[in-house]
Amino acid sequence: MKKIQIFILVFLMSLFSFGQTSETYFSRGNEKYELKDYSGAIADYNKAIEIDPKFAEAYFYRGLSKSQLQDYRGAIDDYNKAIEINPKNADVYFIRGLS
Image (cartoon, rainbow, N blue to C red; front, side, top):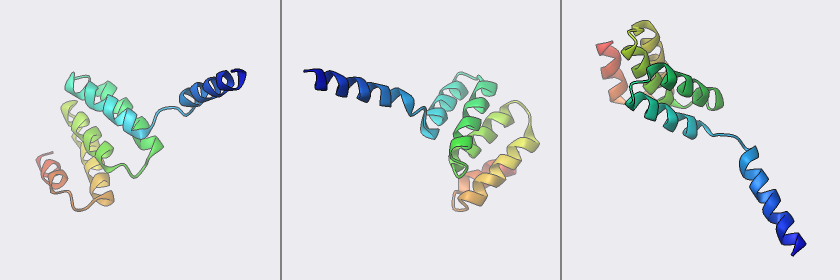
């Protein structure tokens, strides 16, 4: 019985010690974007990109958030990075052109 308790304790500790993933921050950013908390969304997208610098969607959505805050130059920079990572996403080219 003691071994089972120790196993469960170690397992639960491991769940909390791994931290959040880039996908977790990306999802939180999307939720904040939907709530029109663009600065909060950018902060979460920043964390997602910090964890995974090749996360093209995070750059794209961070660009959308920056556009909402009228930071068009920053948005274009993010769209350019998203295109650099994934040049086959036509939506990014279109939105970049609008910016």
